[in-house]
Image (tube, rainbow, N blue to C red):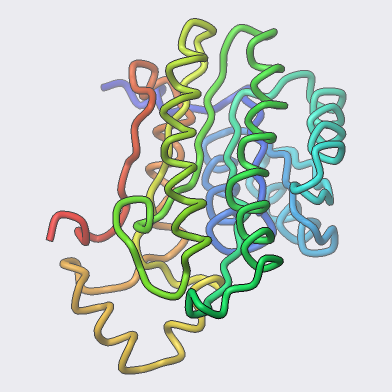
Length: 254
């Protein structure tokens, strides 16, 4: 397979949740493959640091502070990205939160907070960018799901529900937008070393038990998603849509 199938030269990628963790890692991977990057999160100072990293890779970066649970802010960030770069070829919806509580203690506000960020915001971001992609004749959308899309984990009910929803949303949009040459896929990270899962790793016994479930014997790092995100963003995946690619060290296989 020619390596230029994986080139993102001339492409523009918008990444939400890009200030840290998996979002930052995927943004830098896309930049390394040749894309200019629109970086989105709540905190501009952190985004500016990532923008500097993108610039060091020889690519342009546009940092935008936005609250992705607000549709007006989503629409404004997309409009600004198009005004700046002229087009959006790739969307990665990586913004996410988690709240750990027993089901009988989970409050209405905490449920709403997780669903708003992890599911509702994903749809409305896809919707806003999808409109741009339909007009320009195509694009690539990459959602981020979770092992909880495939099985349940206690004490994170809202997160499980949201990620299950994102998995189905990915399939629905893939079917609906296929006629417009928009590929909609998802990446399913396994147990990764990120701020979102830091609480698990602080408990040595819990961390040990989780690692025992991973056939490859280690937690994932943000860099482990580089190949998957470049694949889905590039021409190499043009005939793949509605698919979840698990990057989990073999957890689901076991």
